[in-house]
Amino acid sequence: MHLPISDKIELNILHQNSHQAEKNKVKFNNYNLLCLNIMSSPGAGKTRLLEITLEDLSKEFQSAVLEGDMTTNLDAARLEKLNIPVVPITTGRACHLDANMVSGGLKLLEKKINPNILDILLVENVGNLVCPAEFEIGEHFKVALLSITEGEDKPLKYPIMFREADLILITKVDLLPHLNFDINELKSNISSTNPKADVIEISSITKSGLDLWQKWISKKIMKFKK
Amino acid sequence: MHEVDMTKCLILSMEEWAEKKNKEKIIVEKINLKIGEFTCVEPISLINTFNAAVFGSWLDSSEINIETIPFEGKCSKCNRSYFPKKENGYKSPCCNFNLEEIISGRELKIASIDFKEK
Image 1 (tube, rainbow over the protein chains, first blue to last red):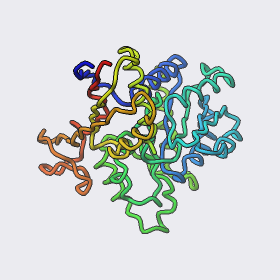
Image 2 (cartoon, rainbow over the protein chains, first blue to last red; image 1 turned 180 degrees about the horizontal axis):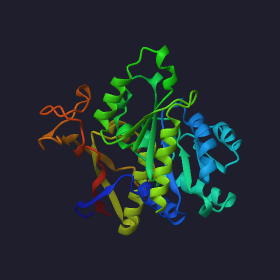
Image 3 (cartoon, rainbow over the protein chains, first blue to last red; image 1 turned 90 degrees about the horizontal axis):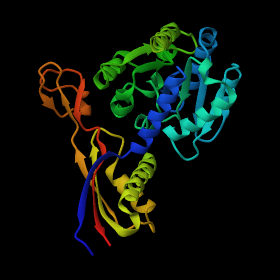
Image 4 (tube, rainbow over the protein chains, first blue to last red; image 1 turned 30 degrees about the vertical axis):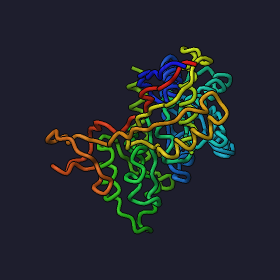
């Protein structure tokens, strides 16, 4: 038996995932395809928001969706009604999408459509405010939704998610008159956690803020395609 | 639950490392990790998950050693470093400024591996 050796490697634990995420990003870039990673807790309104977003967005841009879900294809079935390419990714026991799952989803999408004709790929992550924040998938931007029914304190309780997001959408704002909710406190907590994030208040019922969200997406696509 | 996937990634990284060392001829004694306080990882959960995952495998006798890296930010007004606190909205105690720059605390690293040759 030899003496112990210490090998200093300084390697990211998630290096395998990051490596695949980089490969996904190269693919997206080669397809000239902007990829958004949409994240939130369960029930914050991701799928409904995608439905109303895609109704308008599809008139201007070619869109596709990778739909992450733990056990069902229910959300994917809703989005397929919009006549856009949708690939469901059922994660099983995993509570987030990882780069390998997205790579698999992209391969299935390639069988459905030539991604070269697409402008934007929206990836709806599994509803969870913890894990998705740490697992890169090769996205260009991260979008986090936070519904007002979840409480003002969530950016402080789940800081990694809101720190990592490029855009934070405050959803269900049509419920404001019915709740004892301080939106300024929420905004202050968002600023504390991530002063650089863009913030948009939005309602999928009244469609208030939808124009700002659509503009945000359009700007990102135009800048990306330049 | 994400510690399961973190462990999977950790084991894959260990496999990749061991391939270069000739896996059959080494015994890993300790895997030294650096885990930042501002990550989603709970060290004890990671250790427990790892121990369960490697049971009966080539890493069965290896131990996880975690160095916790403090969450440290820098005040963007006066450049002083500070330890952000949730209770204070992560603001700098010196100037009450929002947390813009993180100096440390986001680490999720395999720092080093202690092993013996058989």
